[in-house]
Image (cartoon, one colour):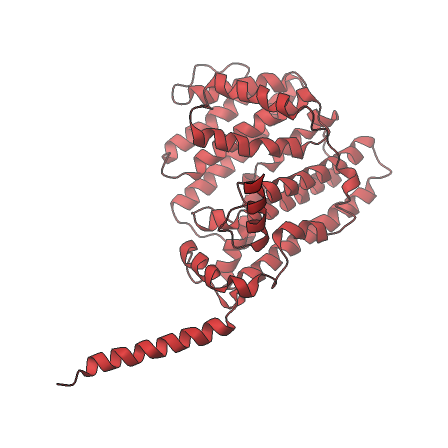
Length: 387
């Protein structure tokens, strides 16, 4: 008896194979539109089409050098690396003494090693002592941030108590009582606070604590939105990202590193927003793979999802934001040339931080992976493996 079902199955299979051959022959990554957030599916698609899209768009490791060349003039970025080991050693000692860094935990050590270059690059002309203070805070910032990103590690209540512990520790000379839930974090935050008091008075540290608290509260909003699968518009995400990036507290540290008072000023406030925007959204580009395969919010991922568009189109959108930010910072720099000296120092400090962030992102194992959708990031990973 003739099996029509088998014949139909065979015929459909042959058609499917020919269709796949035809599609793959002309398929490019630009043809793929995200309908649902499914990182694994996207990476499989990337793997199929990667030989054809390598040169189809501006690469993330090189886009920083093509945005306003004058803005990224290397002459403004010079740093002294001779004391890096001393700085890292001092912060490592602080972290191990407090108990937030376990030298026997490979994951903990790897995270610490990955973060250390950031502060060294963000503040290129810092002294040994100011660099230790800056790095000690950044280490705390990322330690807390990574814990908040892991929704399986903390409940909402635990996450809230964690950020509250750090914020209140910065804002009070001595907490009313020892934090029983986060004793190691509280101990480390107190050590960081003591470092900051080496350079500034109690009032400044309290102000810094309020800046951190604003970041922490926004991070909790984002964390809860992620856990509740809440929707967010691109415009609202851009506003929220300014608070959740942690860039504003890092900018406050410029006053310590370069010894000036970061006073209220419309021009500098605007420049700080633009610097935050540049660092935040360039980070969203570099961390696209890591955040696409998680529930984390990301501008590139969100733009693809909301507009049903390609990675290439979303990258161009993100890069246009960076271009606009860089151009406006340059314009503000010209405006303050004849104003107070601290404003000129502030603009230069912001540029250095942006450059340092770019250098860190382009060379960090945190973002350079063998499975990255960006070919040049994969190439950078190979270089890191050989080093």
